[in-house]
Structure formats: structure tokens, C-alpha cells
Length: 188
Image 1 (cartoon, rainbow, N blue to C red):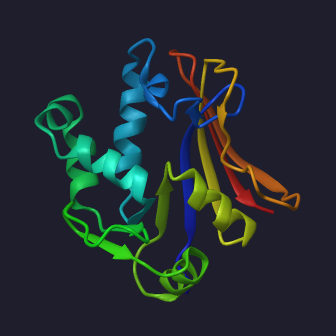
Image 2: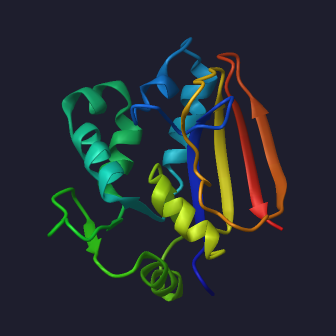
């Protein structure tokens, strides 16, 4: 059976995953919500493997390996550090983050190969350029979004460059007291 490829992203109400400066800190602003914290921790227990572009990989490695991350979200930090990680990059020579493998080939071909290998499902975090390329190639099986109650006005969308309409089927939705809404879709 072929591995599934999913996307998990925080997006603003107006559809951006980064602001105009490439920053994503706005996704973590807001009211503390124990139910949302539990939801985040539960998602981290999902297993499988993670897939990143170089920029997101370096940002994630720079945070999840710190004492601050381990103190703030110990279970999530443990999972992020322990899970197998793939990074698509033409410039990174090796991955220093625990359990990391650098993939230097063309992203679509590399992901097609990964999906055929044995192992758990793969989740893309951040990595908008990678999401666009893989969505265009129709390699993404599911999309999960946390819609944050903020309007950014401008920034980067995940799907800029996707040339064809792609229908999705809503699988799950859930609202939280902090104003965030979780939406999960599968390719139709």
C-alpha cells in the first residue's frame, strides 16, 4: 500500500500561510486554550514522517531542538525531534536535526519515490513552495488547516501557481474557544 501524503498548515482568515515578510508567528498569537493545546499535542502523536523545504526545515530545527520548545510543549517537541524528517533542498548538504534525510532531486520525483517506500504516512508542515509543486502534481492526499482568526491583508498563499481546479471533500471541522477552526479535507 502506498504511503499517504498530507499537509498541515496554519492559515489566516484571508488565506495566507505567511505574512508579507515571511513570518508565521501570528499563527501562535491569541488566547491560551487548553482544548487547542490538547488537540495540538494529540496531532503530534500521529507518527509517520515529516517533509519540509529547506527554509521551513531550518526554522523548525532552530525551534524544536531548544530548551524553550521542550519546556513549552514537551510532548510535541519530543515527537518533532524523534520523527523521521525529509528535507527537499538543492543547497543543504546534510540535515543536522535528528533523523533527517536531505533529498536533493526534483521534488515531484522524490516524493513519488517516498510514497512508494514502506513506512508511515508523510506530513508536510509549512513549505509553501513544496506544497504548490506537489499539489500541482496531484500528489497530496489530504489537507488539514488551522484557520487563525486574523486578517493579514497580504502574504503568501499555499496554492499560488496551481493551474487547475482541484475539488476537495470536507472530512472534519472543529472550532476552538481561542477562535481557531480546524478543517480537514481529502482529495475528491
